[in-house]
Length: 231
Image 1 (spheres, rainbow, N blue to C red):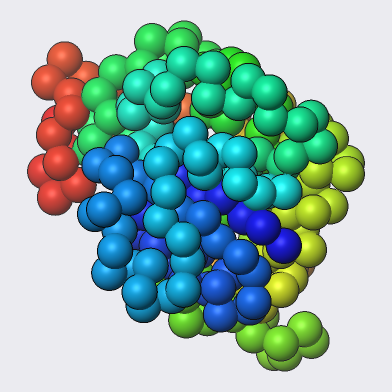
Image 2 (tube, helix red, strand yellow):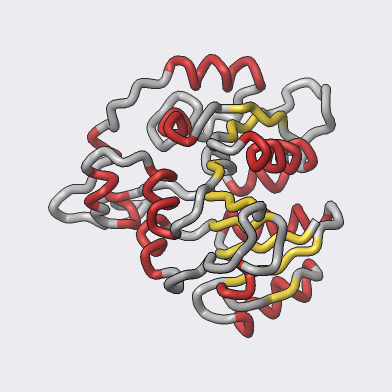
């Protein structure tokens, strides 16, 4: 499968490595230009491209950049991209640590619904509740004891099915986490966030989630700080 990846940070770099190892054709981009991705391209065999090219290079396009940078993506990034191209959002809102205040999310918008509005394109929410190192190292064959499960939320069943298959290929049990309006159940601060549960544990954690965003996941007057010293 041809897969575009916009963002080459911890999750984007990990997905580039893992998906290339599985034989997928990967086109990876970042905000600094393809020349800065020469080492990653050489290591993995991925093709370094511009952000605009990445959006037009795959049957799946994974957007994996800081939430606060989403409005800075090129205008009309997905204009003309076929409707059957699946767009995945891996992002999380970290107001005190990185992103600063995003008014729409602070007012109650669900993170990935806000992303979809910014880019003008439906998205599937996935890969946001696992540490990059675990995504890299902890995939296991189907049926293996302790196999980690990952929730996948989205409104289009066909698009969601594509992402669930990728999750399975990567060595994790894919859990259908319902529509995008339920993706708050896998946001930071919820029971499933960065817990490495198995399938039963993920389903239980999603069910146990409550919609109120905890204070530590709201912006403050001093936001943002850093991950080591949140504002």
